[in-house]
Image (tube, rainbow, N blue to C red; front, side, top):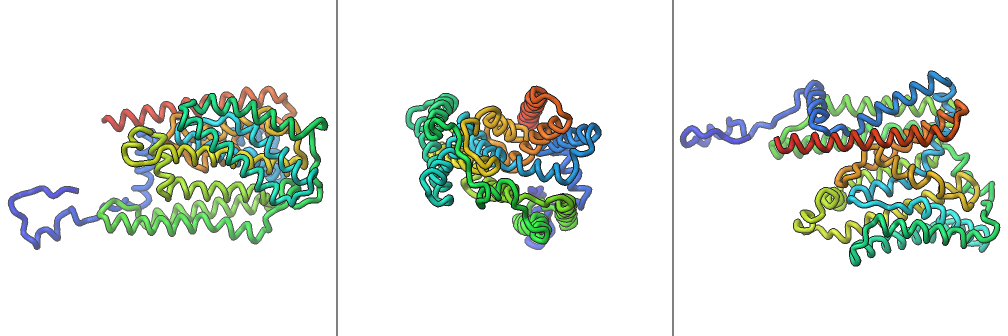
Length: 419
């Protein structure tokens, strides 16, 4: 806030001027007003996808009450974890304004590689998984090399990769076309049976609220020290308390059934780690800058090629890890793994959850919300015994709506920025 000059100010007067006062948000009301203002300027955040999820759950529950049963939701979370991990990688490449069309094939090839090394050649399962993820990292680095050195569009490079990796998957599986994994192995148990103990799940549900409160208080103090506007303590407490109560209720409801799947916990852990990297590190800020305007980022001193490389390596590595989790879920590696709608669902989940196709804006949690929406549609239609063709049509419609909302929100932000 600037000082309005009225002659030469006296030293004692300077201490009373408005430039040394901190603007505070007016409690909860100020927080609500700020949220409404962000929505009006096009910063919708996760609001559209949450509203859509509520509508989807309401419709399916009214048609079949089993949909919201604890056991069905537990199965839904198991199914979310596999493609959800792949979608986290898609968030990375979309953030920098690129695309990877080969994540489905990469996941299928990784599952086949684990099956071959572990079952056919007797390697330790951990080493087989590490090799599969490392292969994914090498493939991602190759895509980045084609983009950075040869200028090959990522659409073309990854489309070629899709075909080549699919061929390698078929070659590894051989004439049998499938490899069955040991049903009683820890890996298969992770994909089908393992549940987080109830006490641990309740304790973990306390963590997000505590983190929100602690980080919010630290941010508040830093902003106050810099004479910037800061949220009130009351608004931070209310937000943390609301998140904690919501998560505890969800965990309690899931524990009425089998409980919270450990594999979904792994997925959420990866999402939390990625969110921290995207929002709290220099690398994350560079990702947003490159996606927003790569030439401006280059002139600002950001190593754009390195950022592209990191995005593609992460995407392909997470695709490989998602393939491993899929093999664990199905207890097999087959020619069908990674094919069908896996590729499109991973991309759709990131976009539906709120990651922009235009680059520069996205969140790890968008993959979580997006895959829950997609799997909710699939689960609801399965319970209603309806054709899978409807699932493709409904998912396509939801994806189109998400892109339209993103485009309109982007136009709104641009217009308000000019204003």
